[in-house]
Image 1 (spheres, rainbow, N blue to C red):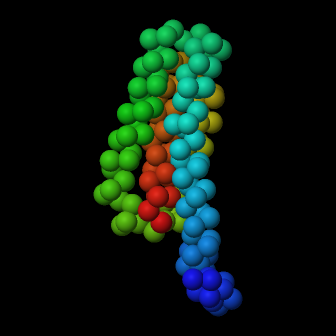
Image 2: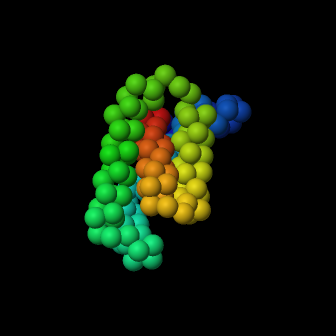
Length: 133
C-alpha cells in the first residue's frame, strides 16, 4: 500500500487521484459536515439564552435542523456517486458557510431557523460525501 501512495505522489498525479489526499479530504468533510449536528445542543441553548427564544422555539429549531440533515442524507444516495467530489465538496461547504453567516445576520426567528436548516442540509451533504470518497 505504501508503494502505491508513494507512486501516486511522485508521479505528479492530481490531488483527486492521490489516496492520502483523498483520505485527508474525506476525513475533513466528515468532521466539518458533522459539526452542525454536534453543536446542536450548544446552539439550541445559546439561541434560547442569548436570542430570547422560548423552549418551544428552540425545540422547533432543533427539529428543523435534524430534519434538514436527515433529508440531505437520504437525498445523498441519488447524487453522491454521480458527481465529481471536489466541486460537490466546495458547493456543500460553501453552502454551509454562507447559510451560517446568513443566520448570524438574520433578524427574525423564521429566517434564522431557515438559514440554519440550510446549513445543516449542506453540512449533511458534506458528511455524506466524505463518507463515500
